[in-house]
Length: 215
Ligand code: SF4
Image (cartoon, rainbow, N blue to C red; front, side):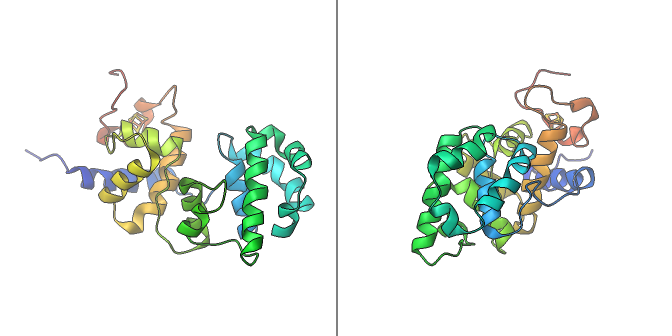
């Protein structure tokens, strides 16, 4: 009789199988520079990437540099990003982050630790930004990754940094970035919060469906 795979082996199989279903390993956010990526990631909190991509062209044209955003008027910036939600906090965070970057030379940092020190940039956003701007390995946990980590039986933690730690312990570093993207795409397309499509799911045979009613 075949023995069940270990949790680590199962995690690897899940991520590899998801790679066939979701081969995209790039963010859906549109950006052309480190600054633009940082801005887009901040705006994407509790907002869809599609919405962010609708808002950013005008924003990037109005504030092309760190200095421009550091000197931006809070109310004007709020007006440009209002449709992304949480616009007051996001405008405040962007201006404060750019002021801090400006004070330390004007270059957007690429390392996660330095990014996480910027006002308004949490550890998750710092991980997402650094993953795209540097070779630093990370597996940042957003709402999709957190939900899937639980349903797939990979983590019972609640805090994103603890979930990331659990996932990183199960997967080789070379798969962390892919795991981040594939779990997000799978969460959007199949394993949605309200109506997961388990019957059509490519990893159903590997998933305990923790927390969901029996099929
Ligand atoms: S089987 Fe269901 S719960 Fe498990 S990953 Fe697929 S959609 Fe999500």
